[in-house]
Image 1 (spheres, rainbow, N blue to C red):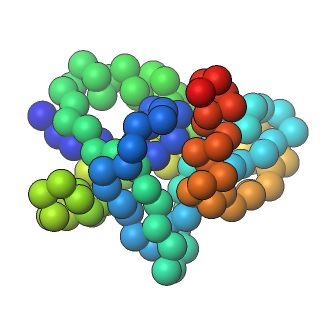
Image 2 (tube, helix red, strand yellow):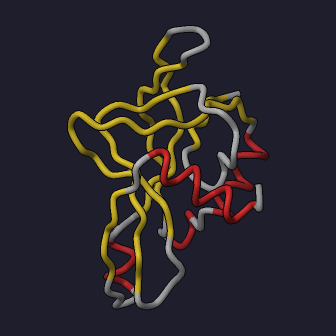
Length: 128
């Protein structure tokens, strides 16, 4: 089993139980593909999310969802603060590969997302 930190669509509307320091949640808008959420390094910022324990089968499913084999998202291992146990855990984190946009010759722009704005956005999507 390993730990997975989720911060975007995989998180859904669950209350956060973890945080990742020195990263910022952003929306990537493109002229060729749908908007996606990812994180980018940024000092003094925090991304809120959830830590889940996953098995290899679930990891493989997420790899397909995040299109890892197409080089759309990349897998990283980062230290994430687990609030429940007050410890930092090495977690698998999927982060957008910006080189993918170059591969498909797409233009994009990055829009920072505040945590509250993202929760409101998710509630609109999920109708809650």
